[in-house]
Image (cartoon, rainbow, N blue to C red; front, side, top):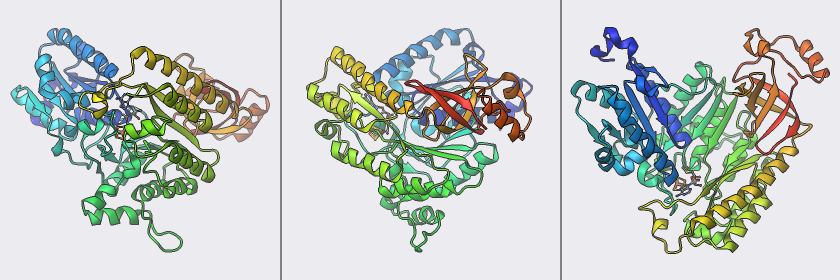
Length: 499
Ligand code: SAM
Ligand code: SF4
């Protein structure tokens, strides 16, 4: 920390972060927060009180951009009341629009593209010393290794990026242009962060990447043999003495073996790259959760080709069958886009029929958004907005029926749940997630939730369960409990805790 920040008024320095977009952005925001807190800033939710406001932006869809531009516009008035306030705009939109954005919104002091997350602290300190505005958008500067610490949103669940960027260039998507080419972190760097998270009490780890199945393949392409060897040997040798060959499978295995880790999730998986070895590794793992977020995007092979996704409807179905062959109870979730240019009623019907055939546990459904600079934005047969909206409604109807059907199958069964905390509406009702990432609600009395008494009295618990009231022993966020499911809705299940 520099000297001028160790002055008397250090305690009164405040920062606010407005974060938009995907989990990768959430993780970047946690790193920005870590750097600000190291500099002596404390978090505030009140923008008017903040000395530094950081807006971490997303440009995947136009709707997100419009919302963010509105917020940046509002900051002009807030800054006028707080002389000296520093406004930083970071992330994908900053990378895409760079100097033009800074020119249009003179309230922006620092504009940081996606490569500058690691160097934010230095850039901010230089600005505080010299008060010279800056635009930083060189994509080539980012190191993939993580330094420093993150101020995590959750007290028990840690997002850990394993790679940055994307090489896929799906024709609708802006991500490869604003996040650059794939760069994997070394396995030592990832495992070190997992170890530190566990030491700080985190028991759930989510490994993040735009295409996690590509993890480490850049080591091979870039002839970084030492990094490749270290990732494949980290998981140890198989029973027959051979080394794991798939870097992502090896990474999963290594994280699974890390003492203190209770659950490991990973996202997003790409249907073209997901291998049987990864599926087998999850099936054989102890803490690797049986949850696969495999983005489908469309059920029509013709549209998948136009999207440059690199697989067909049939290949996707085979992949689902392979997952279910190894892990019959696996939870499979997905992303789907409706209204891609040229999508006919028949193409859309193929998406709906595949959604019904597969039975996804849940799906993020999106209306295609034209992103300037991408190949799809130049395609002729753009779909009218009203058609896109009708298709979205229909698809959500089809998917919701599947979610409800699958959730109903859980009624009467006991599921392992990682407790998250009381619901906002009612502190007497807690929520948590299954290994398949399903939301579960159960009654938990305020006394039991507030007590930090250790859960020792199993007999009391059994008695409580026998009284059908459910177990009401103390619980803390991040604890694993068992809940017997009693009813199901589209988005969640409800039940009674039994231990
Ligand atoms: N890399 C991940 C993958 O390919 O599955 C997802 C990254 S992207 C931030 C998340 C989702 O946004 C995509 O899976 C896609 O469904 C959606 N998306 C991306 N570009 C879009 C666009 N132009 N219009 C609508 N949805 C889009
Ligand atoms: Fe975008 Fe496709 Fe890369 Fe996902 S895989 S980030 S959808 S280009």
